[in-house]
Image 1 (cartoon, rainbow, N blue to C red):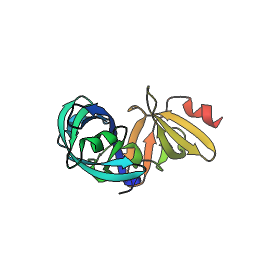
Image 2: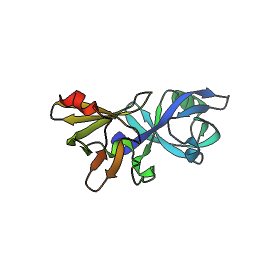
Image 3: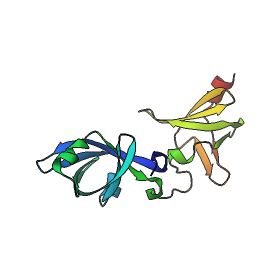
Amino acid sequence: MNKEECYYLGKITKPYGLKGEVILFLDVDDPCEYADLDSAFVEIKGNLIPYFFQIQNLNGNKATLAFEDISKEEALSLVGCELYLPLSNLPKLTGNQFYYHEVIGFKIIDSEYGDIGVLRTIIEYPAQPLLQIMKDETEILIPLIDQVIDKVDRAQKTIFITAPAGLIDLYLS
């Protein structure tokens, strides 16, 4: 399994108890969706290795994991490692909802300016994520908020937006 075929689930942050359990920080929107998870890929030295485990406790974004068929020392050596799951595990989104990775490369059409470029990436900032759009050599940053996204056309690989008034002018003038 390649990392490009997976999404980031979280990171093992510290040991827990005396039997080799560890704490996993889940970097997901709804940790409860992962309460029955029993395996994941652990990144070790750039390679994704499958591991099986039981979730002993789930509290907010923290889960206590007990790995199967490994020693306490091996479990402790995984502290600091990141966990991944295959992209195929993600539920399909419809309408204007999307995963960031699925819309990279989509054409962006603004209601006032028309085609303003191609989505290069989504930059995650604490306040709000930003669409990074490239029009030739010009970078355009648009806040990724519900009021901006008009329609996501997956078939045509296009996102229709209405950018805040005057914002695109700042980049194209």
